[in-house]
Length: 294
Image (tube, rainbow, N blue to C red; front, side, top):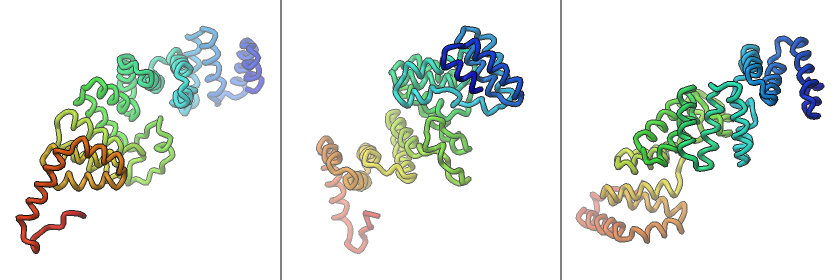
């Protein structure tokens, strides 16, 4: 294998092919020679032989069928989109049914704001691997951009269900490093996805579901100023003055300057909120007043 790698480094692909063949005969239970031969054949335009070698690698060791069998995700994370696209396309030349490669192309297209291309690649990824958390979430993002809110909500909800049964997002290093204790989902983005769902419900006009979504996200640890401000706006829309005041104060504790700007833009509604709250308190006996703050 070392001689083959050195030959590839020199650009001597003929010698590399011979060396990989020798390695395969010496180590028939190893998938590495077949895998490297597949990519060597792809580089020289012999795609049929490359696909055959790749299938032999998968049959020999199934662990080689993984999203991390190429450098595409690394290039994507490094914002080197041309190289990432080339890496994913190289895999698809050998195996057109590689769901992770289609997912990678979809993620590259999202980064470059090629929404139609992204949707096509991600729908193919979902068809090939319906249990892909990343594919459903990326597709949800594309559908939300198109303002197809019901379909985006369905995609995000499916990703949450998959996370709850143990599926992990391959593009989220924090999730991959989490220990599965059988009680909490191994998904570092679980709470933030609930917040995204709440935003989508609000955009779709389902205020009650949006409020429930933000409360769920906050309870799961997405306790941010933006989440509280969004919740305050929904409470104002629902004329729940006391809850709006409570949410606004919680937001102010986390980001005072941003909260003040938000308050200035909505001062009329907030003034009405405070007046209604004050009038309600004045109508109560002091002994019967409920505790307004937790």
